[in-house]
Image (cartoon, rainbow, N blue to C red; front, side, top):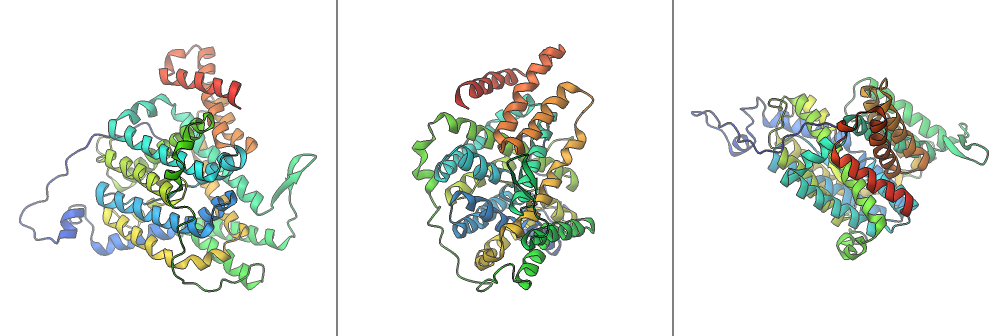
Length: 455
């Protein structure tokens, strides 16, 4: 999820050895130099697509809760993924795919729109501005200072907390967890057919993951949807292929509503989007680069381009009509399949474009079908908890509060704010105030003012 090391300094590529005849694709992506070929990169790109294709159906389901047109969101999701992944492949030349991020879409829908009462059109403005700021920070190197200002423990906590949050949403959608006047939440009716369908989805997705299937989350959704149709719990789609739906209901709303940005609420919205995307992207880049052997002395070549591609994708996605677009850890599936260059990303990008013609399948993707994906992805995002220094209470307390506050207050922003508020305070009490970055104290004052006057 997070890291403290990502070099934004451009580094020249090593020149190709002389005397070898190569095609333009080989020369551009340096296939021979990196020990790969077109066939291997194509397979890697397909593998990455299958591993993350679930977002095509989960994202419209999540953002649809805000009143957004799900067909338009489907198109925006596919186009944002195709755009971001193509830029990453051609400009940064890494086998890393991008798409609207899980967790960030939940923050957009359930915190910004449904809890804070901000119109989804204005929330798209916040997404666009966060991408713009991210681009400036990435290109100027300020990103490094801000990353270093936030302790690693809290960065890990943010990812785990978001995992808990989206898993809670999945449990609610499946009605495995239901409201209760006596205890706020309680166990739902597990004999309810639709709930049993979601339970089946969780079990089969977990089984596929345990057996090492790339794209387990996607295949789990497919099998759950097929079973739902076969048992008449879900109406079958009218078809599998159709013309691309209209993007008009969401396209350009971020630019039309740009003047609405100037509100106190939007400050915390933009900050949270920026914060989460900031560290999620850096962590993903470093993790995949380490897996593929790209790191040089612990630093990532062309990191500035990779971060720039991510921020451009966020801006483009906001204009199209979707929440923050970010690098996907599922890209590691493609790397494991042999992907080493941006050509794999180009293949993934083309597959996202091809997927635009399969919008009728959205009819099968009911809350019971997406719930298993939300729950299982939540589990995967919680793995950062294993790296927390729980024996140090100055870390453990703000981490725990960050993680638990997200699902219990139904707000990713609240969780992040509480953690950043507690950390410097406890470090002062511990006598380690010098170990807190000055930016940490600035954030403390801003967040304290937010809780006193704005909440």
